[in-house]
Image: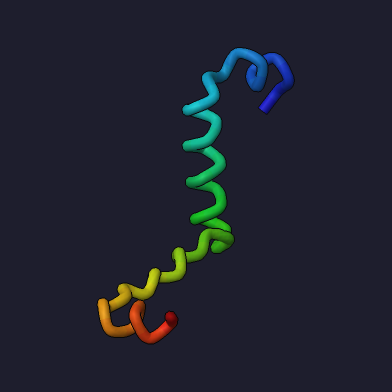
Length: 46
């Protein structure tokens, strides 16, 4: 991508291209799943 192309490309479009490239190259990873707390577990922390 030339410098001029980078200057005129919308930010959102650029982010989409970067996301697709990272998925294609295997750099994207799943987010860790957050633990769902029960009331008893929260109260046990006290």
